[in-house]
Image (cartoon, rainbow, N blue to C red; front, top):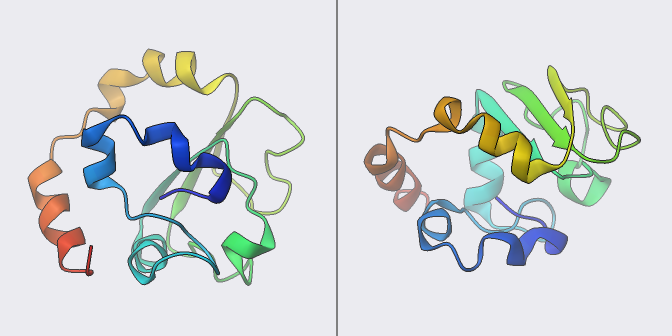
Length: 118
């Protein structure tokens, strides 16, 4: 998913564009909001969790464990509680965890998210 400020971050990467469910929140797609509602893990990279994205904080990603990566310590746990927090620059932080983030079920995810109207 993406927010307005993060739309261009994955625009050049076709793999991530295929996996992206577009914008989230009140200005987002049904598929993106549905995916977050059903998620068991939410990797939040550089997000603010503002009210236009979350709506009711208690209901937002209620089933998910949240991993929040942000360079600004003021944004971590500001609005939505994270289960795991990483206060660091996103790029080196993700590169260090690349083996952990390896996507093994890309085909399955593509099948699921195409079923949501993407």
